[in-house]
Length: 95
Image 1 (cartoon, rainbow, N blue to C red):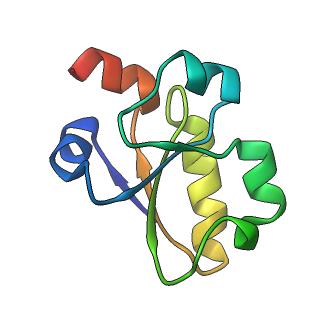
Image 2 (cartoon, rainbow, N blue to C red; image 1 turned 135 degrees about the vertical axis):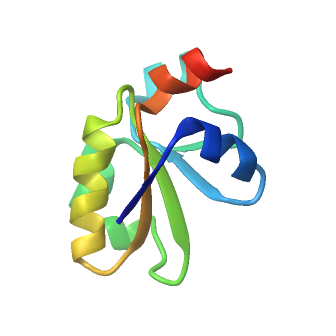
């Protein structure tokens, strides 16, 4: 598992698999452009339903703690994942 800053994420936006793991209501309220919403609780129960082990995924949550936990788990079972440090709150501060 790797972790990147929001500044690094901004340079990569456009052709990455970016996943917002917050609730759908938070996602619908606002999110990082290009992100797809898959809630943490749904994703952790059956990652193979949503993720392909041949792809790389970037995850964020509100502050970066939940996505870090998820990335640790997904990495341990063979997924190529990147945690966005600071999550959506860091995005708001950076943009």
